[in-house]
Image 1 (cartoon, rainbow, N blue to C red):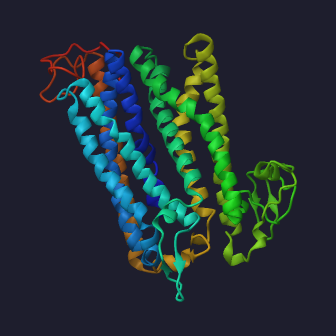
Image 2: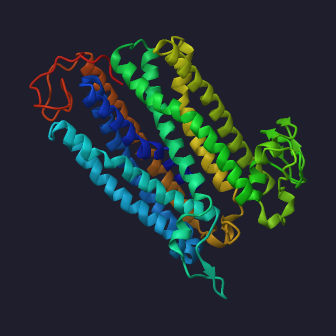
Image 3: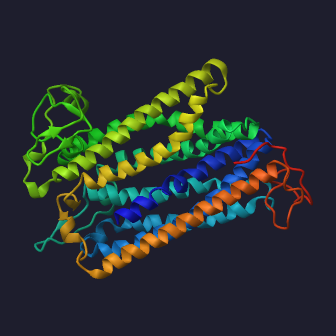
Length: 462
């Protein structure tokens, strides 16, 4: 489950955010009669369709794993929190239909009609995120049910089961995070082209629009991250203690950047900042922070699990802080000169920002899941009660098959993207002098399909 979720989550930012960024570029193209912007939107929509197809495979594997690997959890709690997965499934099918309409609408629909038909796409993507985050937030702060004499959930209140105390902080932190991640990844592609000498308007626009979206959202995400950490402090104090490797309940608790927690409660390595943990948790050094030792050993993460969650959290915070500085650098240059920063180091950092954001997405998931241990449903069901028999030999066979499948799927995904990129670049450089039947390129994404193209009009491709 860790392998498949860790792989699938890399696609989530593009599934949720790429439609919105594509439509933003599409709107700019129509509003300003900008052929370059329309060409970028058209090409991004093709990437969006390929990504969605890959997501179908990885998402289907995950849906099977929920039943195969977690029979105890799904059997007992499925009626309580399963609605979130139902919402996600409906959103998934709706998004598939809307992507098909949007993709095949180029050159077949009137420009503004095509745009308005694509506008529901980001809403469908957000609805899918709503369902998944609702299920996960319920696992962190379960609500909306009563337990009968045998310990089974009854009297399910669907509204309370969806809108749990952690839902709001998790949802907005997740949505803003995936949008800025997609923005930085897309901009990074054009930053690499810029560093390779492709300084045309195509690369400039392909970089500026998604990077501006990401830069605006970066400080917002930093504030939301601080807010969700404080929500965890109030709603899941033991989990907060794990992410901050706090062993003993106390005030004036120091903050450790990295470091390792040992089973006896001692901490080795890292950077110790006196009193900062209490200040961050409650805005005062007198704030009392619950320690891991306040609960029995069987009800808290192990020292190794706490260290993993702590490192994941600190990596996420460190990268987020660096991205704030990158966004400020960009904003300062734009406000002063209405131009991109001239330093190659800026574009080197921008090229790395997308990969760094994908790493923070992984770290955020690790913090959420590992920090909750040993509970799969917080304070109601342990992982050991929910999981299938880990001694079954078929489990390792299934893991091997999933690994092979994912290697093939992601290999095919990268191969298709590289071929699309090469084809676009050759078309823009004038290497393709005639449009083949069914060719998607041309002078404009709208209007009659030309009999031939001259290429090179909009600069290099990426």
